[in-house]
Amino acid sequence: QVTLVESGGGLAQAGGSLRLSCVTSGRTFAMGWFRQAPGKDREFVAAIRWSGGQTDVAEAVKGRFTISSDNAKNTVYLQMNSLKPEDTAIYYCASKTDYVLSASPADYDYWGRGTQVTVSS
Image (cartoon, rainbow, N blue to C red; front, side, top):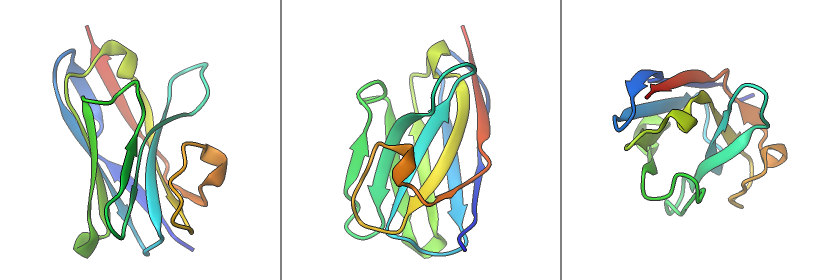
């Protein structure tokens, strides 16, 4: 069993920045960040492989959000810059037990409880 704990959410103004962290209790093969706004489906944000650091970022946040990892700390980060009100959502960290990066929530095996990000205009 792998547990994931997100932190770093909060309130930011449009144009501001936040950095989310996700600490895992055990190593899997790949990690992802998703978000879910009220009344909407869970949406892919970014993913990264622990080994090699290959990443994938959703078009909606490309150029503004960066995913990275610190293998020694079992931690994945999501640096969010140039925030927009439409980035407001609960952000979830997830992990996979295979190497394939995926944008589908169904492909992830473990999930954190999420952290709220609110961006004011």
